[in-house]
Image (cartoon, rainbow, N blue to C red; front, side, top):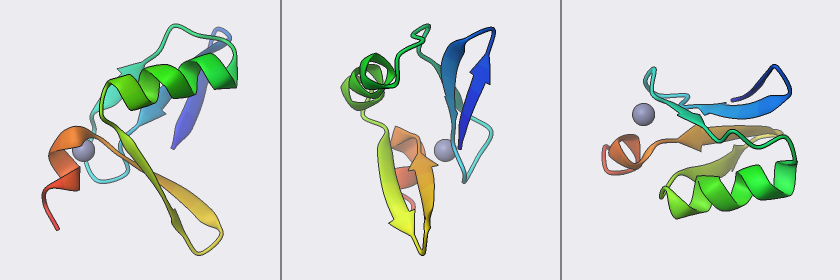
Length: 59
Ligand SMILES: [Zn+2]
């Protein structure tokens, strides 16, 4: 899931409690950080699921 704290976007892994604090307030900048850190977003139904690098291997 995506969380916003003090205007900065933080991604939280939906499979564990790993978080990625981007320090960015713009979604497009945060997404660049998200990709550089090898996180992945998957659409499940109408919801986006966010997975940290560790949880992507665990399927
Ligand atoms: Zn994870």
